[in-house]
Amino acid sequence: MSFNRASCKKLIYIQVIYVSLVMFCVTVLKLPSALTYVTDIFMLPLILFLLLERSHPLKQVGAGYVSKIYILYALIIVIGLILNLVSPLLVVWGLRNGFRGAVFMIACVSFLTSADVQKIFNIMFWLQIANIAVTLYQYFVLDLSQDNLGGIFGTESGCNGYSNLFFIILLAYYTTAYFAKKTSFLKLLTVAASTILIAAIAEIKFYYFEFAIIVVLCILFSKPSYKSIFFVLLAAVVMLLSLSIIERIFPDQAAVVTNVDETLNYANAEGGGYNISRFNAFSRINQLFFHGDPIKNLFGQGLGSAEMSSYSFLTSDFYNEFGHYNYRWFSHMMLFLETGYLGVMLYLSVFVAVFVHAVKHRKVLNRTGDLYIAAFVQILSLMGIINTFYNASLRAEPQYLYFFAISACMIYCKKRKPCTSQVTSGIKGEKTNCY
Image (cartoon, rainbow, N blue to C red; front, side, top):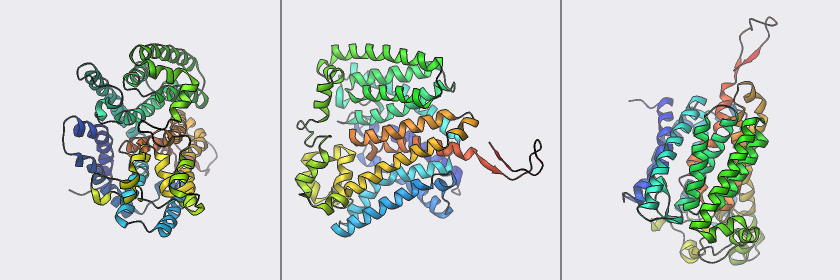
């Protein structure tokens, strides 16, 4: 059987579903942990096909500057590697962890259509329905909670970080789609209520702030309507009800969510596993490891130099000595350690570039009735910046879901194709655009 573009499209569908379920298979069904590396196997044919096509999918949809940022990022990485002489095996492992989502985004832009985007989000909605059932079973029957309550994302400590990323994708999409009359209120209510409920019992404190941010951004980036006003009021009621639930189940958690000082203390905490605080990560890493070296601060200590794996040959000496600082729990700490300030800046610039692309194409998408997709990607690109500092989910398997989601605006821009035929109504010989 020949491998073609249709096969690539099927692989993307499979990847989205597989990534959503693989940790459940590993941590709950006790299947081999090596199953997580099957996601890499799915990527290989996509990469090969993209190379054979020699196409530039991002450039074709007006996002060539995203590619240029990645080229600059790669240049910074090369300089850092020259300065630090990292093991080639660790470099490959670092490339795998840091760039697989970006490659998947390019594949999505190349092989998917707007109809595929809608189908995949419908699949993700039904995955959330399954997630509700599994999570409630884990909580009420298996007595799991907080960091070990991940629903379809398993029961390994920290699995709720995967849930958090999944939730913000669903909430941003279904809220913008509802405002644009592209989905039902029942679906939006299901997503909003279920994510809030699971966040409460899984102790995803930060999701309440993300929920509020997403709702506000939806209003800013979408066309105002009675629907948006109604949903804001409903969201406020849901938030108040959820907070009352949290106060009964986890009173300490409620204090963190409702008190500004407690929130700041939580974000800036050191100890209890958080051995480098989120807020002071750069200065603390400079103090502990770079010792004021300006070259290290600019370029880091080399891609892969701070990596770890379940396989010892892919675990760095640095991690063996300093892994107890748990810097791998946060994307921004890993980025700074390995690529310095320049690497962090260019990594975050990708999200800014995706945001700019969505803004630039709002008029085009408005003419096709798809303005909500631009609003959705604007929101999600900003949430990507926030999540870089919140946890490390954008370096783990869920990054595939996120990079698929932020590719949506670029995919929809493929609907705008140059039309060289003469128009039948208007000035004879005039060229226009087809939508």
